[in-house]
Image (cartoon, rainbow, N blue to C red; front, side):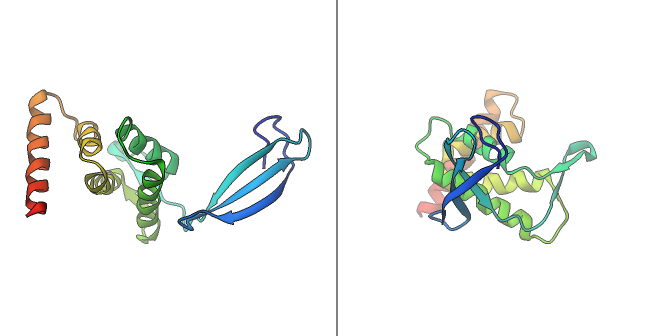
Length: 156
């Protein structure tokens, strides 16, 4: 593992343990060159998945892009990094266990929408505004009213 401080390729693992949700391994490492300590996380990757984007462009599934878009939607909201990580891990697990080598970006977007709807209504609307390409304030109003109606129906 490359040291983030001096870029040396040799480091020793000093401590390993599973994360709280047991979806990854946390490792404390020490660089053999500069002696700096740093933490890495390892996750299981079940299979290589290709995302089919609009215009038939294809690219490898990238967990960090998914995490970045969800974090952006949740910015300045009372949503912990742990809850975001659990949502990202759940979506990644669904994508990897679906048994398909390719998944449409629209399908991933719908998974994110489903997760954000349960996580935070404002983050849900923020993500939807980009994902569904809102152009006018009326688009926000219409979507927000459907979110309010759904919440009222859930309450009973």
